Length: 152
Image (cartoon, rainbow, N blue to C red):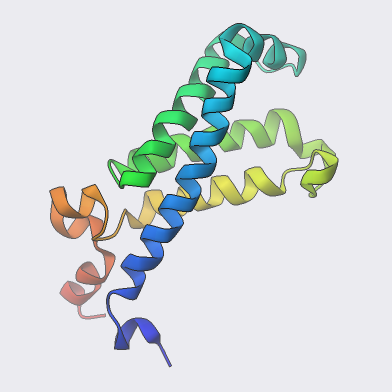
């Protein structure tokens, strides 16, 4: 049984819960970079990890995580935020975690894989009707209405 057919609001509820959960994690990581470590400290850390252009990368990571997380929580510009966050996680995967295996406890890439994949998913499907995108832009934010239009 497909619950979404019986209760068409469920995909939007799922998107809302997923956006908020993912957004909270990104805001926490961005806030940690901004408040606890600061730009100079984050740049130093990125430099030690061999990340190219560490000062620019520190700015990008901090603000994309902080503002992108907020955008996900409210569902505003979800495709843009999702792409930027996914790119940020791709950089973390490539430059920091890929050679440490899968498990986060060993410095591996499982967390950045889930965060990046989830951000990319939201970039593709949108915020749902319970996000600002759905309210402001209509059907772009509500995937089930798009499916109804094409007769799926």
